[in-house]
Image 1 (cartoon, rainbow, N blue to C red):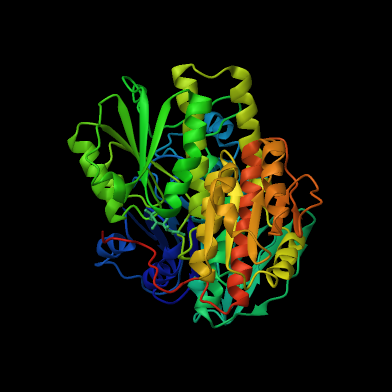
Image 2 (cartoon, protein in one colour):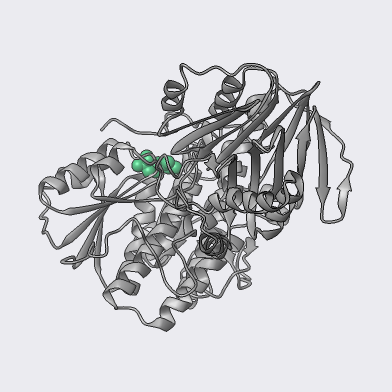
Length: 602
Ligand code: F6R
């Protein structure tokens, strides 16, 4: 996820920017850059990879005296993670950093190009700086030119602009992406969240959508659509970890709430109006491929299991899923018409990495779906599709699972589109559902409060069964894994139709069943499976859009037009239920006992 830092004042600006960007590292990024103007001296540095690379590049540089400065960490969306695509972006005499997405950037870019402007990067951001200079070149008046620029932008943005045309001023605007302004005496700071300025600024103002303005002489002048407005600063917290959690109690909770937003990032530039684009893959990537094998561990294995239904149903390609640690030692028969996919949040899981190496040495083409660019698994693969979930801190994976599943769904559609095994109608229907997923992932206060209340009834018993059919079976596995990881209670995921083949022997009032009962997928079948359990006095917590009388507890979901929308909405319910049970039991939600975020040993 991108991060922004800005500073105007007399202190050493390089250090303020680099330290600030360091505080945003946990959000994830693949390149970074800074720009500083002191008097007539303009300096700009960019580096791909870790901030350490930028530190190396700026080693010999020191800023002196009063100046204006902006910095950025970039998580690639439009265009690859290269130095040219890294922010700040330069016009002729101005620099800009930006978080978010300028939705109309193609139109703006074409207009500017027809005026003779040359673009250096593939980013949407570069349009901002060229627009500003186009207006400034006509008027010689910086702030009105910035206002006109902002007026042209559609989409979400938080942006800072500095220019040699106003060497004592930082221009800013916010709409849909977070940004705040920090104050300490005559110094002004900007940042996309408060961690970079904690310990530096004493007061803060959190910008509202539609606000813009400029900072000069230690003062901020603020506008919105109605004109200039006054604002009230508030004291800034001194606790960094609390600030990193953005007000949530746990990273896991924050990450559950983030899912709606990161899903939009996962789809950005890939899910288009009537087609799927995956720039990461060459045009002939699927030539000669007639089957898929996926290897992964834990939660990533569950997203793989979900995708097997999608690959066979949508893309009409045979798909086998293997647990990486099993695959390694089973002496598998591998054929070169098989695309070998690995899925990993960290990109460092030892079993998955070794499975990939085995497949490669057998001559298979490889693709990884990963959250961490430049990780070992990404480097080892022929191609990679990044999930763009941003750094996941909670050991129990949530947003990584959601975005992996989305990438796999996108890939299933893409293969269908490329191999022409999918009709226009189906493509349209799936894309339409995809575009609704951010809504289905939204956590409402009502839902969270309900799960909090309900959780007190599930703190004992001799175990949980999460049951579902079809794609809701892997979701049941994932729901059970979340619960056992952070509650330390026994939980199993099971195909609903299999309960009567053995596990039903466990049924009694102290067996808790979490039943995933989607309307769009085998509703009558799962209903009768749940009825069988209810008849044996099992305590049932049903999750469904359709009311179900036999449930002891019932959580009614809203989205019932497409199985994947039901899937994602139910996923959020199972995540929050696990979280609330764990909180009541007094467990360490973010760092459960015995678990590690990255499992680099066999
Ligand atoms: C569960 C969890 C683990 C990981 C597994 C694989 O919440 O986080 O089960 O999914 O260790 O890790 P990655 O995806 O990094 O390969």
